[in-house]
Length: 284
Ligand code: G4P
Image (cartoon, rainbow, N blue to C red; front, side):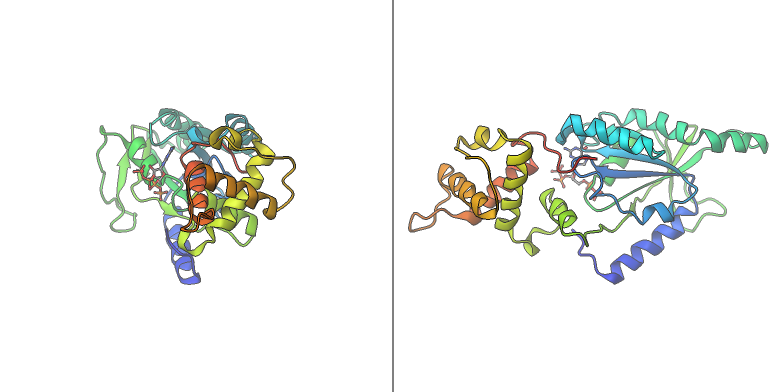
């Protein structure tokens, strides 16, 4: 995953500013497990005056109750929202309808000007790893043709004709994650969006244990068949849980001590592959 430093960020921002001028509707992907932490707030300024669609992607991995609440939350803010599993394709079809709906006003405006049947132009945006490429592949499907360069369009840009009504810019806009707030950083690290090598895995696993125990009290007991005594006050208490996980899963050092690093990896892996259940890390 990309390490974000100011140079990178400035470049991504410039690309976004250039591309956004060409489009009518922004299709913004967020991760349904962390819809706010995976959303870059700067996009609101960049996408000012554009129709806005939010896709709660990877909803197959998220807690449905919260996903529904997030849908309401974003709709109340004026977005058109869809739940999508880009990997399986579930929900992808309805995105066409939603894009059309989001652009109804623009289509009506065009019509008043005598412009009929001009497709709306869309761009997919999102922070790294939210599923942009997977979504585009699924959205585009097979039955489409690239339309190539057009007058008035920056050279080299490819538009993919989705249907009579929609054209999609073939390259997604990469937004930079905002993790100045440590809690946001932790959530992005938990879903695997921040390079693991720069993270203290044990610390991250302890954060996860505290969160899961509070919000999904049975998940750890069920997965690892361990006793988790209430309440877990702090990371020290969480470390005791991690120790139990290590012992149960035979993650042991040479002297027979629990190998917390390995146990942490195992736990994070289990979380990221939903073996601990469908867990959403933030609620509206
Ligand atoms: P990006 O372009 O935004 O950077 O993301 P990309 O499409 O590369 O997707 C990142 C990872 O998320 C991929 O997994 C992809 O398969 C997975 N993914 C995307 N959308 C969904 C979804 O709706 N549900 C689920 N469960 N997963 C999704 P990967 O581990 O990098 O690759 P792979 O193991 O799938 O091959």
